[in-house]
Image (cartoon, rainbow, N blue to C red; front, side):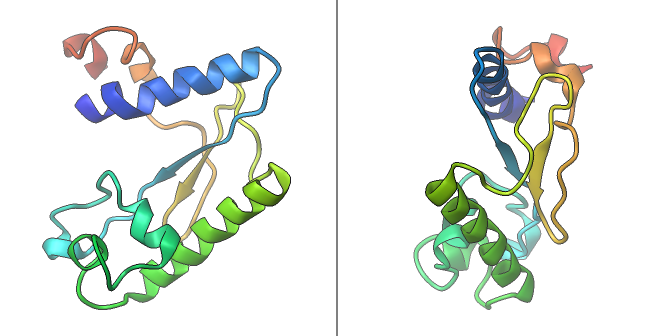
Length: 136
């Protein structure tokens, strides 16, 4: 619940405002369950850093991903780098823009997907402080 309130829902609200104002927004979520620390960290905040920069052997990489280069980590590095460089070069990361009707979000995982934004009932989260009202 706190992750939704602090991270997910403010991003969704910002994307909705950007789209409503005529701009483009692209959402993504890193959902890959990292094997680091015996799987304890799961899809933790900041995991996309070592995957984007390919630093699986340095800094946060060994802790978050594990001591070995995993095939899945290298596949995710390729997915994320391709999207970021495409966005930097053309303004398009390679998946549809966000709109309030479709709510498409790129899910970086093995395999990747672009479903509607997950957990829509929690949309009220982020407009208020965290509470049980966000648990529907």
